[in-house]
Length: 260
Image (cartoon, rainbow, N blue to C red):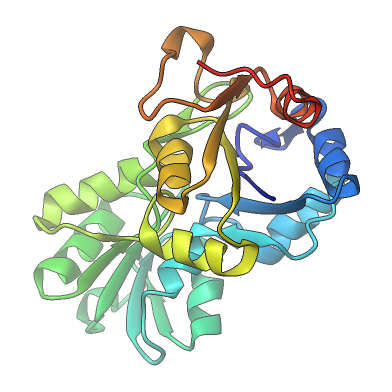
């Protein structure tokens, strides 16, 4: 069986490890489970995600999927892409064979972008919103890495890619093609590698839970990220609920699963 794990709110909060997460992954791997890591955080390069997992004591075995990868899969090689996102998106677009320009670069407004990709980045400002939304109004296709409104951090939620994307949607009047969890591009990419049977573990129902439904997997909800016990029940409902990943793994492997 495959275990598809979210990262932010499941394995770590920002740079802080969630206690027991590394032990949980090691336990799954040692018991013969296939473990993949799927994140809607498009900012970080995939190689950096693998390195960060290693620093946290987790061997990813190259089974890391990001929403930047899913977004790039929607775009044909050679396409001229305006990037309103972070370095993870730029890297995947270059790997795909696309030309890129940052929405804040001089001349971006006159570059003739065919696609605008929007994802999480901490340098988003009015100029990027203006240039990116103008490109979309002028005919560029809009692609969003994901619609997560927030990301969990040790000090609380911060605005996510969905909040940035919402401003571009509002300013351009156009709806985006969506790439990351819970949408088809990510589901196709992950299922083609890990197979049709498994469990998605995440900290939010609107992305991880809906992703599990789309994948045909069970949904394991952990309360170590965005969702708290006071938010239960969720929609879609969780098949399994635990305080954190290690508790969920112990309960599942021992047959004492807890759900609603």
